[in-house]
Image 1: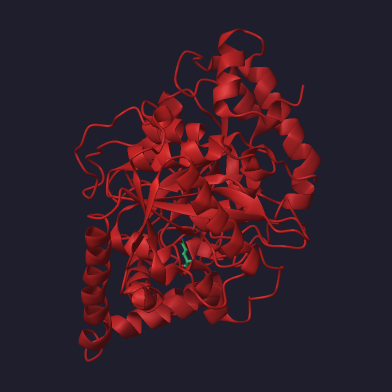
Image 2: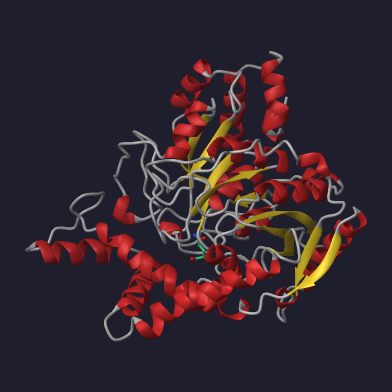
Length: 479
Ligand code: GLN
């Protein structure tokens, strides 16, 4: 029956009409995983018996009743491993559910398993995983993007109906673009971060990967909302994000940032994005040029703030409380041996950089300066949004690159997120959806839509209008 190729919306109808059971659907997903995950390696951990048991008791009247989803290995699920793809957490088992997991359970979702990622969400290709690489379903020689590459590959490869990832500088939107699915980074404060292992706390947000915009709206309605366990979560009512999906784009103003079409951008990506802009215009949107003048500083600012926060957040992994330990003669030697053996090279690079940026004598020149420029970047968006309702841009400057191509060149790797990072620094919302394919090889291209803070409704509305008027979301990788 090929159940695995369906959307949440399509499957809910089948489940509710009694055409299929949740067990049948979960079994179909497990069969699909069995068939293709040997090639893709999207999953790190599965518990088929537990998934089937969840299916047997799933409440099909709930918003995600009986829908199998995959979870990035950075979110705590009681009784499951949570390694953040790091050696330092090998052997660690979670003792509580993240808030988003509790919300998924309450909504009736089936938790299939845990997906691969760059270690502690640091990277853009999922090559920085201590468990090995994940492959792009469209071309097994290429990366699926990162850091949520496993969650993206699982949805694009139809090994999950939807999944959760986290986005600190682009880690949902960039892999969504590179694998041809829909990836949403909600506004900072909309989704609780409780139970998300922190990378950079002022930037991290959890969000969904789905096959369609409608499914993304549904997932967001489930995971959004105030949570007293996350002090940065905002006490605002959660609308039904599907309500305005069909409102169209007539009379909406779409901003085109002149700084986002840069030299060095792949020509097919640029052509596809420009065509998408024309499409939005033909649907009745008014396209206006806007400026985000501090865009050039975003990558530098991000790699100071994110690394500074990471150096503090990762101090807790010391071989005492969590996961792996390498014993030394005394406690200090135990710390350094554990951290020396447990962290991979990219994580070490960031801890060193972040510690330096925060150290006495350099704090003002680096960290404080970066915070000031962050404010300017945020103001750029505030000003731009006086002229438009949403912003359109590429998600990634290139399609998926080859495995190994950028691993030895951190700067090249960091530039993968040149169009996504500013949104995290400003705190507003962003979404990537498919807008075409390259010719040879056939690789997905992503369109990024950026919305005002807490205006996911408009973001999803524009995305849905574009998606429904184009064929891209119907394409499937051959595998
Ligand atoms: N690629 C960026 C980084 O390496 C963003 C990662 C993320 O969003 N978690 O930091």
